[in-house]
Length: 82
Length: 266
Image (cartoon, rainbow over all chains, first blue to last red; front, side, top):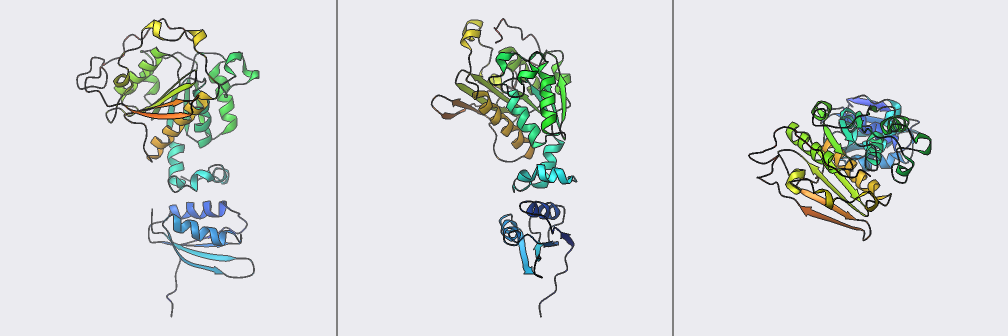
C-alpha cells in the first residue's frame, strides 16, 4: 500500500491561467521549508503539464499529478531546493 | 515580502526566472539607487530600474528639458520642454510604476554635497555627460565604498564599467587624470546617434540589477566598449592599479578636492 502524502500547505489556484498558475505556485513554495510538500489545485489544463515541468527545471520534486474530476487537477510538489 | 495581486502580475516575468523568484524581486524592491543625470543615459537606466520595481531611485540633475534633448532622452517629452529634468523624469517614472519612490534632486553635484547625497543609497549610477562629474563620482564612491556603474557615450561609441571599491578597479585606475581641455570634444564635435545611450544605459541598468540580485558577473576590472557603426562589443581588461591615486595602497586623494574644468558642456 502506498504511503499517503500529507501536504504541509494547500493552494487553490482554480481560475488562474499561465503563467500566473506557476508564479503563484512558485511564490508559495519559496515561502516553505525544504522537504515540505505543497498541494496545488488547478483547473487550467495547460498548467497540469507546464507546472510539473517548470518545477522540475527549478530543481523541485513532483510527487503526483492527478486529474481529480472533469475540470480539476491536483499536483503535489516537494520542495527540494531553496 | 508579501506581494499584492498587481505586483505578482507586474513582476511575473521576473518571478518566473530561477535566478530571481520572489526573493530576488524582494531584493529589487528593497534596493535604493542614486542616479546622476536624467539625460541620455539616465533615461533608459531609470526607466528600466523603475519598471523592475527598484524601491527608491534618487535622480540628481540641475538642467531643464530642451528640445534638442528629445532625440535621445526618452524620459522627457515635447510637453515637458522647459521643465526641470528631474521633475519631468519623476512624472514619467511614477506613471510607469507607482511602487517606486522617486526622489528628484535639482542640484549640481559638488565635492561638498555628494557624500551626503549618496550615503543612504546602495548603488550609485553615473549617467553624467562630463569629466569633472565622472571623476568626482568615482572618487566619492571609492571613498565611501559604494558600488558604481559608470557609462559614457560619444558619437557612435559607448563605454561601460562597474566599479566595486576594494574588489576591483576604479575609474582612475583606467584614466588617472582628467583629459586636458583640448582633447575633450567641443559642442559641435560631440554629436551622438540617439539610440546609443539607450544601449549603454540599458547595459548599466542590467549591471545594477545583477549587483542587487548577486547573480552573474559584472564588469569588475573590465571596460566594455561598444562600437555602434561596426556593431562590435569589445571587453578590455583594466587591472586594479596598486598606485592608483584614489583606490591604491597609498592614495593621495583621501578627500574630495577641486574638480573644476573649462569643458564645453553640450
